[in-house]
Image 1 (cartoon, rainbow, N blue to C red):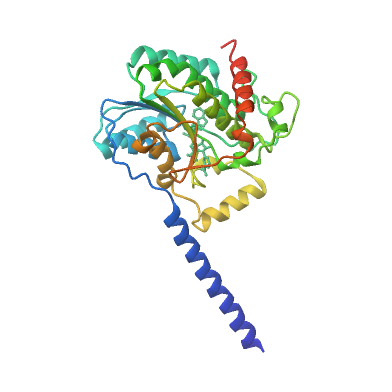
Image 2: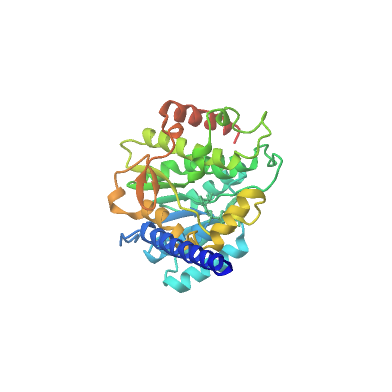
Amino acid sequence: MFCLICYFILYTVVILFILYLLFLAYLKLTTGKCVSDAKLDNKTVVITGADKGIGYETALDLARRNAKVIMACRDLENAKKMAEKIKSETGNKEVYVRYLDVSNLAGVRKFATDFLKDEKRLDVLINNAGMLSASQDIVRTSEGFEITFVTNYLGPFFLTSLLLDRLKKCAPSRIVNVSSMVHTSTTETDLKDLNSEHSKNVKMLYSRSKALQILSTKELSRQLEGTGVTVNCLHPGIVDTNIFSKMKGLFSVIVKIIIFLKLAKTSKDGAQTSIYAAVDENLKNVSGQYLSDCRITASSKLTQDMALAKKVFDISEDYLGKF
Ligand SMILES: NC(=O)c1ccc[n+]([C@@H]2O[C@H](COP(=O)([O-])OP(=O)(O)OC[C@H]3O[C@@H](n4cnc5c(N)ncnc54)[C@H](OP(=O)(O)O)[C@@H]3O)[C@@H](O)[C@H]2O)c1
């Protein structure tokens, strides 16, 4: 009897292990890779949050393609170290660091003003910087914005609008917004109080910020028709980066298990769709799309509502009034 139970347990473990290996193989095979060998000579790229994780790997790849890379980061010490690493790995000396805290709108304006004064070109803007707050309370910046809303959405939205004329002058040019699959849990109610003036619900802040990115991508794309500037957004996959480091609770446990089981992507794999959106020739005339694993895919039904997209875009512009 005992042996029968042992045999059953062993059998189950072996089957589970085989299923796990098959799933790993499936993930490896379906992970999108940017296969384009497009070069970016004489092109200037701005990548926010380029000193860590997905942003770093994106900067490294685009530097390898000979782009002039501007790493827009707030951790200057680390960013300078990583810029040196990119230079030595790629041989590209045109890798620069500029200070940018996207959660501070006055700072975003200063970054854009200095950039436009010093740089002639902007060919690709990658809004990659993002955060996931671990706080159980609404956290506000000194300018009065809820931190996740302004970091993941309003700051990048403002940056894009300030740099838009230069992107138009350098067309064909591209804007890439790094969103997330998590946007799918956002409901229309979540979009009624963008700066959390009334609601104290912190659980949906990240997913809402990512849904806002997609909605504004859709509306901006509509506005940019015929200008030669494209704008797309994307989900990079579940990627083993620092973004989860401060998280607590059940979601954090699930993510840690996924990472432990090697089911999450490496940062290099996680950067592939950003790189694809930035360089692939097949996307030359593609705009307003949501990408995942280097393919166009469908975002949630809510984020495909063009009337809602316009409304969100207009409200966002209103927030920027005094900046
Ligand atoms: N990892 C995933 O599974 C996953 C999944 C879906 C979407 N994403 C998105 O992918 C993007 C990159 O994230 P990651 O996973 O690579 O995380 P990460 O390793 O934590 O990198 C995030 C980068 O954004 C920067 N950043 C955060 N707040 C900033 C601010 N206020 N101003 C300027 N830079 C700021 C960080 O700089 P500091 O270190 O100085 O804060 C860091 O350089 C994010 O938009 C994230 O939402 C990630």
